[in-house]
Image 1: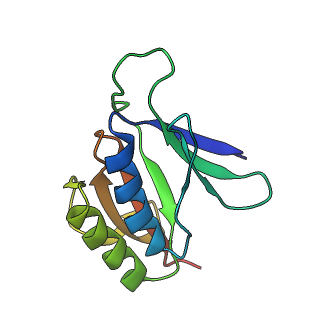
Image 2: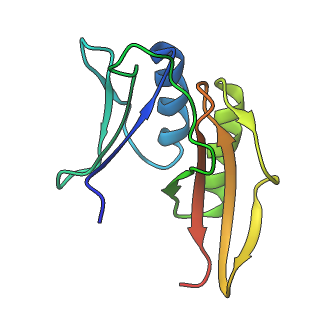
Length: 128
């Protein structure tokens, strides 16, 4: 359904350190930081995640009620993702990593705020 997701970042160096650390826990390579400051994480077949300073020059801010979630293969990967995020400039939000029931779907989730305040998650579906 989605081709790409781009988040705003106020400090692209801090964001790159953060996202390189957490995404490596999920098996992804370091992002490619362009001269513009935009950083891309390519997942193949035209799908990518990126962050950038807002093009209008205003500060980046988080979307209230918005969450971007990354798929993970295991509890261990999610726990490592969460720990790496906290160690690299992320902050706690919501409950600690753990199992959740979403209307019959059993999930293992962890949430963080990135260095610019964007709410992100890592998720492993236990119902599969």
